[in-house]
Image (cartoon, rainbow, N blue to C red):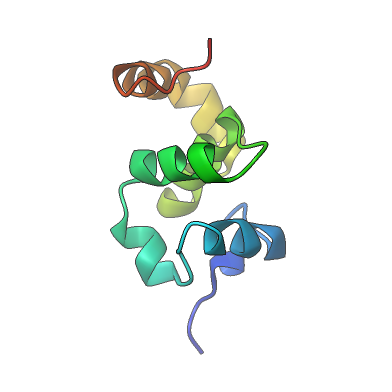
Length: 89
């Protein structure tokens, strides 16, 4: 049986619906896109996309809970988002 997006750590059925809105329908497509590019697409196209989304995307890719990503890598992630013009104001 192939893995579904909802099977990745921290994701569920709602995640699949949200990713479908930006053209991501499979784990392979999710893993193939840069996490920051995916976050940018979500910010542009899905109302209510917040900072926790980037933590969840990175966490799911790496198999760790998004809170752990937030705790341990927040500064690095915020700096990258700032470089892209996507950091929260």
